[in-house]
Length: 294
Image 1 (spheres, rainbow, N blue to C red):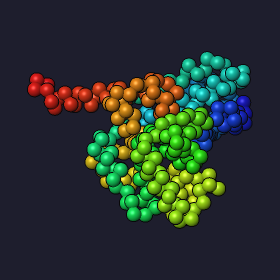
Image 2: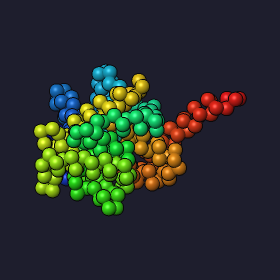
Image 3: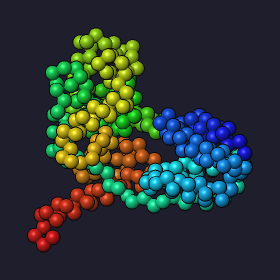
């Protein structure tokens, strides 16, 4: 079997047919090239159950954590399904790939007071402080993923209807509501940009860096982490913390789980249901603190 060509075809399939993001395809490529190197270095003629068992043992010997190991197994399983559908391997080979069980980790989120403190941190005196505030407000108001926020354009924002048009995972578009305070922060930022003579109408960019270029996902992450570190009180936080905070606060406020799923762009409701466990955890803390017989 020419494993190299099959991997190349599979990655092209993910891009063209599945509309996977460049980051996801890069992750798949890295894991599959590791399998390819293992395959070629040992001059293995064909993928069979022994090959897979030995490869799993090889991965375990590398001391990967369970999450990394589970990702590599999932990648290989997707690749084998692709090959099986094209009659290049036996379809039952995927059953010889066992994935480690992962403990469900409750996501970190901020309290309402922490969130208010966070939103007060950017300095409103200049355009970049206004930009940072707009970024944080949009994260919290809409539960966007980092990549989704970085890809926003001016045309993505409907100020009249108070919505955002978001291109999510798998290039799936969704329309989500956005709050008045986030929109006002965005207007303040856009006004400050126009005063700097930056032509928004002819640009596909919404968030600029100080060199008037597009703000990358990495730069937005760095900005968010800077402010989060100031209020996190020892919590391990990231831009995704703001997405978790959005969902958690909606649920605490009585929002319907299905509606939260649609706003987050989750494919499955089971993904969103982790926030019900998180909400229960908060209730237990309140109960333990408040009830005299707890």
